[in-house]
Structure formats: C-alpha cells, structure tokens
Image 1 (spheres, rainbow, N blue to C red):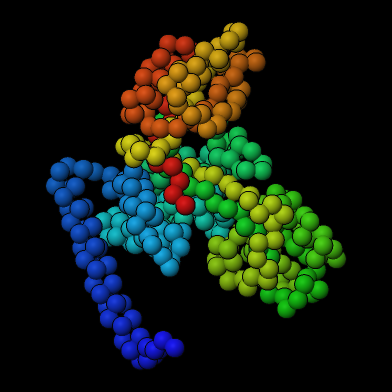
Image 2: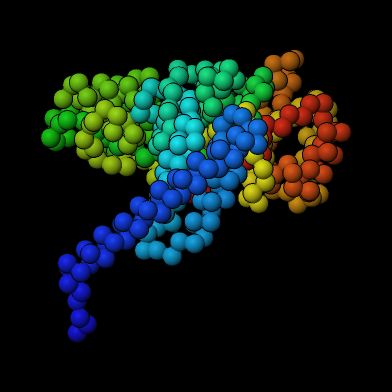
Length: 361
C-alpha cells in the first residue's frame, strides 16, 4: 500500500506554491506597467490592448497546459490575469447591449476579462456610436446565433460605420431558471426575453405547465423582476443571476444544448496576423448574371476557405444587394491579399471590415 503524505505537509507545500504564484503574478504586473511606459515613450497613444498579442498568449497557454486543469480553465485564468495587468496600464471602457446581466455583457467579460468597465447602452446602433465618438474603447455586438441566424441590425450598421472588427467571441447560450422560491410548484410566473422562452419551451412545458410565461425586453430585466417578487422566476444567463443576486434553481434548461451566439468586438484599431485569423468584408456585385460567381472565384483559386456569406438589401436601389463574407486568413497573408486584389476588379464595391484572431475557447 503506497504511503500517504500527511495533510499538514500537503498544506505547507500549497502555501509555498501560493506565495510563489503571488510573487510571479506581481512581477508580471510590473512588466506590464513597463510595457505601457515603453509604448508611451515611443509615442504610442490610445488603448494598449492588442487583440493579436492576447490571442497568441492564450493559444500558447492552451498548448502548454498539461492538466489536471482543463484547457478552458487555464485559458480563463490567464485571460483574467492579462485583464488585470492591462487595467494597470489603462482600464478599458467596453460598450455592450444592456442592461446589466445580458449575454452581451457575458461575452465582453469572456473576451476582455473582468478588469474592464462595461458600459450598458440601449441598442446595437448606440454601441457603434459610443465607439465611433470615442466614448468607449471597444464595443461588443451579437452577429449570429447558431439556431436563430444572423443579427441583421449589426450587419446593416457596418455599411455606414468606419469601425473595424478586431476580435470575436463565442458564448454558449445556457439558460437558467432563477428566483427566490423553494420549489417549482411555488412559481406562478416566469419572465424572460421572448427568444429565451422559445429556446426553453419543452422544459418549461414539462416542469412549469402551471406558470404564466411573460416576455420582457431582456433577460436582465426578467432577473430584476424576479428579484423583487418571490413567487416568480426568470430565465436568464449566469451573469444576470450574479448581478441581481438570484439563486439558480435549475441550470441549463435550454432545449438545444449546443445553442451558441457569436459576438464581434468593434474598435478603431486593426489586428496583425496571428496565423489563425478570419477576415470579414462586404461587397456589392451589381445585378448581373454570374457576378457573385466571379466575385467568389478568387477565394477558390487561392484555396481560401469561406466561413459564411449573407445577403442584405443595399438600400441603394430596388432589388440591389450587398454580401457580407467571412473567410479564413488575414488580409496581410499573401494568398488572401492577392485574392482581395483580384476581387476589387470584379465588384462595384468592396469594404474590408477587419481581420482578427479566431475566438479562443
């Protein structure tokens, strides 16, 4: 039988490791402050956040991790560490679709970490305005959902905005039942956004057939309402439960467990190539036979994968459309650059929305 290490000895080892971890964390923070001073001395202005650098660091952590911590946990820990260090250089102001407790705020925290100032605004258009007018450094907006499709308001706003896409983040939409009731039988009413109620229809019909389902403007508003009425409950994300201090009664009650929303980070800056990037663009081909085929041909010629394509009315003429396209690679990559140069000669309009690192976990 193998010998067992005494508990006191194990605790001593953990205490020594904790002290060393703390020393190294503060050493890292000191270097981060030096980085800021070096950038300022070189004449750099604006935010010191670099999405390409952050992505490379997190991918390296992913590759180095040997457990027993999961890759997700290791990446999340270092994202928060980097967030705290960046806040020493300059705290970031990030606009999101409010109020407090929405999935958009959850996406902002997942991408930037919690050492940021999140600024709730009332609409997708206001998120763009906040960044365009330099009220916030960045904005986080939803762009597509795996079950509901694209968010048209976001795509349309890019037609008039000078902002760039400088990052993406994917959030699994886990819906949770939360409230102050002791049992499901006590719940008389459930609040949530209409879309969330639809995403949990089977569960709600099975376990709460007696409760009235009431659609409200957002899941965060649902949580607020449930927080002041003990006979009601809300369906919302975990951030809402934290903001409104609501106990979670049941976790992950959504009917589709893989339901995921993709968010994009918008800002004034561009991102350098990391080797694992996406490029988003919008084109107009004109209403001519074979026009879209000619536009997409350069991507096939240079073996560039096309991730997504969506058409939207151009608002410039009747039955005229623009196409939003996501491709693999960075606009600085030689094959992508050459394909885009050829594309310019085949379309009536080409707008590069940004090249940015793919989402990390």
